[in-house]
Image 1 (cartoon, helix red, strand yellow):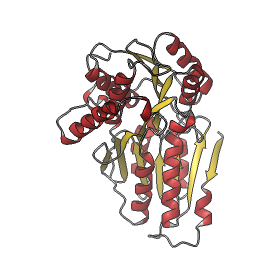
Image 2: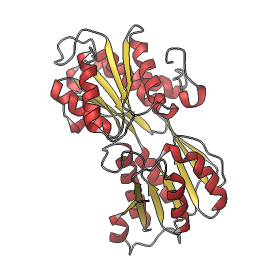
Image 3: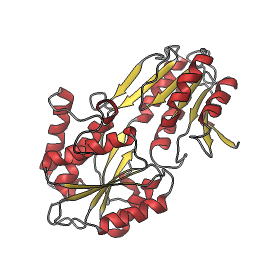
Image 4: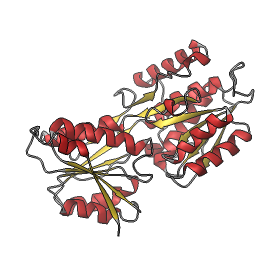
Length: 340
């Protein structure tokens, strides 16, 4: 088995900074798509680096050529190697982590996008459905707006996701629900790339979707989504980025990005661990109310459409936070009738 372990350089640069606690090193297991995806992994890694720099402990990011199949072995090796905190970004690691946590009670574990039982496991959830709803509200308004170059008259949006799973479909259902709140008859085309790390495939799929009538495509595909953004730029249409602010990847052709603040969550976990306050046995939720998800400021696109579009987005955001608007959550409610 080949494991590629990357040492977080800032951990050594700040080695002289006293830790908030006498803590063993922390490990971050990188998910499918690897570092350099410009999305989920990179955002989490930025928060990881910020956390270890702030508290002065050592930290390592661990990549694998087959992170799904090798999950249990990777996590076991990390615990055996003396890492006191093991955070996995890979959704597929949840079951194995729950099993391993009992074998390594002195190791602190963290998993995202699911809830796992264990006094030494912190489960971290995000309100991706809520942020995606706002993206749908915006996109449904823009997609039929006359006078915007790259926008056609048809009410057709697209979504390109990596894999079909509740954790991914949570984004899609929220997006569709938001779009339908503006136009109940809107069409949302959905396709799965089956990979998080193939920009070429993402570009090919996006071009086909643009040719079929969509003019805005929301990607939920990690590194594959970089190709979706490239296709939007080359074809003159629009993409919606995910996880991190991807607006600058193709200025003027990324309508907005649905930012998922995994960096904030990861930094908080590292800080809590070093301070001796690791939230083992707890579920942390980062939704709109916690500023855990949301849309970007649309630096390159906000002047393309009327300000009233953003008013509609803000009204939806306020209603969701107030509890007046329910956004369907696939991960806890199953699949709605409109998405089968």
